Amino acid sequence: MRAFKNIELYYFTITYVVTIILTRPSGFVQDYRRLFWIIPFAVWVMGFVINKLNKNSYMVMWSKQSPKMKIYYLIFTLTMIITNLFSINVLYSIFSGLFVVGLFVIMFNVAGAAIIKINRDLKLKKFITNQLLFIQIISITGNFLIPHWNWDSTLRFSGGIGPNMMAFISLFSVLWFMDIKIDSLFKPQSVIGIFLSIITLLWTMSRGRIIGLIFLIIFLFLNNVAILLNSRLNYKFSKSKAMVNIVVVFIITILSPVSIKWIMNSERILMRLTTSGDSRLFAWNILMEAFKDNIIFGSLGWWNANDTIRQYSFANMATSAHNFYLRVLSEIGILGLIVAIAFPTFLVLKSLKVALMRKDISRNRRKKLLLYSGGIVAFFITQIVEDQYLNGIGDFQMGLFIWLFALSYYYLNENKYSFKRDD
Image 1 (cartoon, helix red, strand yellow):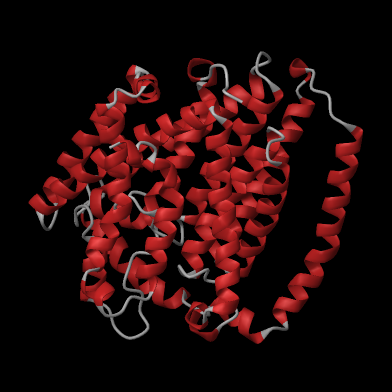
Image 2 (image 1 turned 135 degrees about the horizontal axis):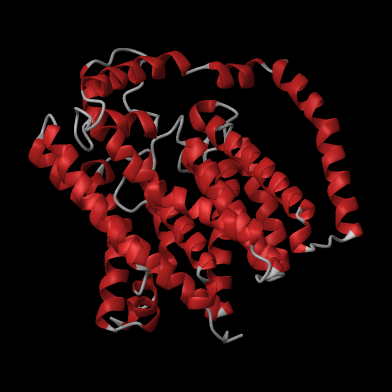
C-alpha cells in the first residue's frame, strides 16, 4: 500500500504511456484495449481509496468543501437520473450518468488533495513539473525517431497520442508552466516548458486548441488592462515588463501577416485547416434533430450520441460528436447542459470577481485566478469542435479538465487550504 501512496502524482506519465499504447493498437493490445483504458481510471480510484484508508489530512481538508459544492453533487446526480428517463436505453444511460457523476466527485477530491500536497512540498510540485516537461521532450523526440508517430504522413505533430490529444495536454501544460513562472519556481523548466508546449500545440494544427490558446492570450491581456485601469486596486506595473510586452506584441504583429501568407501558400496546411468540416456537419445535424425531439431533457440519453451517429454514418462522415455541447443537448437536453457547465461557469465568474475587485489578495494569487479562469474558458471553447469533458473514464479527456477545476478552486480558497511549505 505504501508503494502507491502518491500514485495520483504519476497520473500524467501513466496516462501518456497508456495513450501511446492505445493510439494505434495491434495484436494483444487490440484484443485487450478496454483493460488498458481502465489503468488511468484505476489511478484515480486507488488514489481516492488509499487517501481515505490512510485518513490523509489533505483529503480531509479538501473534502470540507462548502455546502454549495455538495448541493451541486446532489443536483448533478438527480439531473442524470431525471433526464435519462427519456433515453433510448434508460437503464444504460442512468447507470452511465451516475458513473460519470461519481467519477467526477472522486477525481475532483483526489486532484484537490494532490494540489494541497504539492503546494506544501515543492519537491512534489517539481515532480509534476518534470513529468509535463518529460512528456513534451519525449513527444518531440519520438515524433522524429518513430515512423508510425508521423501522423498519416502529414505535417501534423502527434507526439504518439494523436494531434488533438497532444494539443490538449500541451494547452494544459502552458497553463501549468505559466503558474510555475508566476511563483518564480524552477525557472529553466518553466521557460523551456512554455516554449515547447506552445511549439507542440501549434505544430499539431489542432484548430480548436489553437483558437483556445489565442483566446487565453486575449483573455489575460484584457483582464490585466482592466486591473490596471481600476483605480481602487492601486495596481502598479513595471516599466521594464511593459516594454518587454510591447516588444512581444510588436513581433507578433509583424509575424502574423507573414505567417498567414505562408499558410495560404502551403497547400498541405491549407487543406488541413479546411477539411473535415462537412463530415462533422452531418453528425451535428443528427444530434440537432435528436435535441429537437426533447429540448428540455434530451432524447438519446447519456453516452448514446456516438452510437446513434454511427447508425447513420457513411464514407468520410464523422463517427463521433466532435461537439460537447451538441452531444450533451441531444443526450440530456438544456437542463443537463446547464447543470454540466454550472460548476466551471461558477469558477470563472467567482475568479474574475475576486481578481478584478478584491484589494486584499496578493499579486501572484490575482494572476493565477486570471490564468486558470482563462484556462477554463479556453478549454470549453475547444469543445465547440471536440467532445472531451465528462467523457472517457479518467484519461486525459476528463482528467485535464478536473485538474484545471481543482487548481482554480484551490486558488479561490487559498487561505483555507494553504499553510507553511516544506521548502
